[in-house]
Image 1 (cartoon, rainbow, N blue to C red):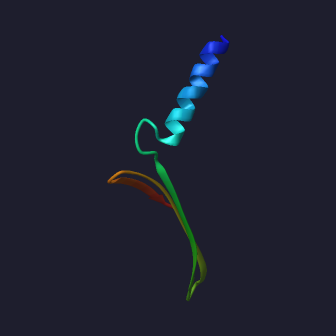
Image 2: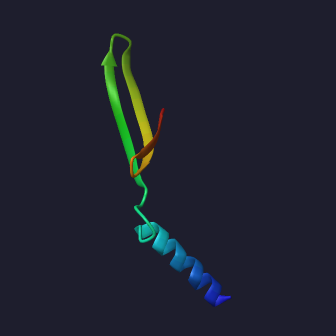
Amino acid sequence: MKTMIAMMFSLLLVAGCGVDGAPLRPSLNAGLSLGASGLAPSASVGVRKGPVSLGVAL
């Protein structure tokens, strides 16, 4: 059982540091805009791996 847990943690460590390939690069953007109707908040989050990027604007 201890061996299985150690193997799982090792796999997570390898995946997290990018040894098996380039790691995912997270991004976060937040801002405030001032307009005629007052302040308007904006935010976006995303991830990038190589030439592929995926993002969501909130």
